[in-house]
Image 1 (cartoon, each protein chain N blue to C red):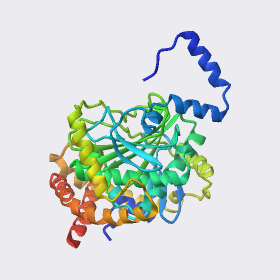
Image 2 (image 1 turned 180 degrees about the horizontal axis):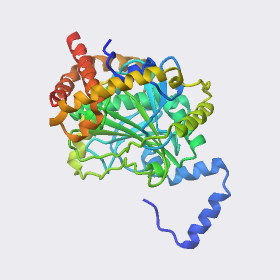
Image 3 (image 1 turned 120 degrees about the vertical axis):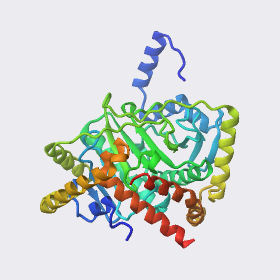
Length: 231
Length: 182
């Protein structure tokens, strides 16, 4: 994707970038950005949707067939730079694209993924939303490990985030609810015991989710059945 | 209500303790007690919607704007080098609870999270077929080439009806999943 530069050229370029004003830098990034060129039509792509604010193209290295990239036409590197009304527009489009994937490609689910920053897996300088069709056993394995967070650290982060978000720093629901928590926990423990014996034949991974996922599946079916009844 | 048994609805109702960081009439944001990283948050609609396609557009817009703000706040306070915004929509996508939610995950190098994939190889013909199918479906959904307000209103209506017809498959699928759990 990137051109080969000699060491001198690279240094000169870095120096040039350092001295740029923010506007110049944005203009420079745009010129370098492969997705801006796709949007401008200078590089070919398979467009499945376009309006005045964004375009949706098929990823040429898809996680699954039908993997869509939604790009704002304006060059933003990360999501926090995008104004509110544009975020609104983009994600209403995401909803429609996800809906289209479910219907047209016989997918049974979709993942919506945004990476802000290299550490998050961002590979291009242009903000984009990945919409990935999913089927059972499609070979994709995302790993989001679960780590027990300490109470003190959680509370500290909560306070920090609250003040950053301008949320009124309430004493926290957990204080007024500590009694309820104990009762619920004992109930949950009991429930888990009974569930464990029931779930012997299911997969190990399902076991972990225990009572929660079982309930949720019931809800989901109820919900969907209701809609079908309306028909 | 279909939401009676939903663990997230109980959480919204205050029946389960949370570490909430943001709340308004429609949205609640809580910290994950078992987050992948410290600061891992869930952006949750208070009303019970199982998947993205069921949410009204105004709520979709609001939820993702809140997620964006939470992501900015995470950058500011945690000092991480990145954030992921992640949605699992449907069971094969990794959804575990039938209440739509957006994950906002602080990221640092080598933190054990993997949201990557191995690209699949498709030939030109396969790509063209997919392109055509998607374009047709998106047109059917009423999304014209220019997304004006009036059109998005009609999209809303179209989606409602179209989605119901698509739920036939969905129902089969959810039913199958359910039957696998004795």
